[in-house]
Amino acid sequence: MQKEYILSKNQKIIFDLIDKSAEPMKAYAILFNVQKKGIKAPLQVYRALDKLVEIGKIHKIESRNAFIACQNSSCQISKATAFSICESCEKVSEINNSKLSKYLSNFEDDSGMRYSKYNLEFFGLCKKCKSK
Amino acid sequence: MQKEYILSKNQKIIFDLIDKSAEPMKAYAILFNVQKKGIKAPLQVYRALDKLVEIGKIHKIESRNAFIACQNSSCQISKATAFSICESCEKVSEINNSKLSKYLSNFEDDSGMRYSKYNLEFFGLCKKCKSK
DNA sequence: AACATTATGTAATAATATAACATTAACAAG
DNA sequence: CTTGTTAATGTTATATTATTACATAATGTT
Image 1: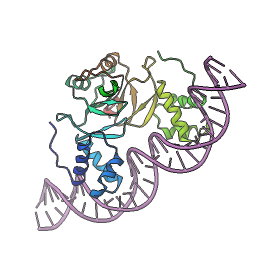
Image 2: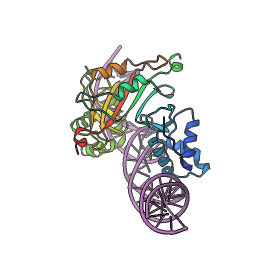
Image 3: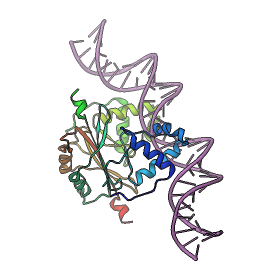
Image 4: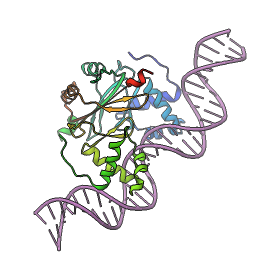
């Protein structure tokens, strides 16, 4: 389970926005949305995003420079993330598959090295887009 | 095996530079390096990078916005990439592990969906940095 | 030769992210 | 209950990464 963490004012505003969004949100889209709440500068957004990523409330989709709320209550604090990304409609879902996460968390490379963290992004066409 | 592909002038200049580099290179570092060869504008670099990524000669390390030459002669044209990244010295290596690539290429999510492409980035400390 | 495709050149600008500095809030230790 | 510490905020400026738009040249195909 995620450790409870009390969000600060800006962190809460920004998390709530991302959490309500159906799609991943980009930093400047977030900025635009929260300006009416008094968050005026990019840095305020990026600082909140950094913290939210750090505590595992959100994840960054690296290939898209966008952020989504964690959908996975047992997420290992952003240390082990996997996403499916539709290359047509850009829908992103967090993959919550214990076999996959076990496999990757225990993965050793050919030199025997283990890793403390990973991020995996799968690409393809979602059901909707495939049937079009 | 990678399909042979004749690189254009700019593509070749930029590929050679990346290929010789020990570390992943960022676009503007590349630009700086190739200015003496007549490549003056960011777009010239990005166009070459796009093409090189498309044909699998280089890969983008998404979490670092940087590019490395493909180390894997049997790489499936950039459709299936895995990297290890040292969070201390930023050394990046391409992981060439057939069990891993088989596992991920055949992965089905819980809805049964298959993916045509993936990118995986592992993070940790490399041997050198661990022993420090 | 005509056409299509790919690559190039150039300028401007958009989008993403951080540095530097000052201030305030939250919280633990004595 | 105040001192010291850490985390969060506010603000300005700037650095970094990437694309749009438009014009031209090179290459490959029929």
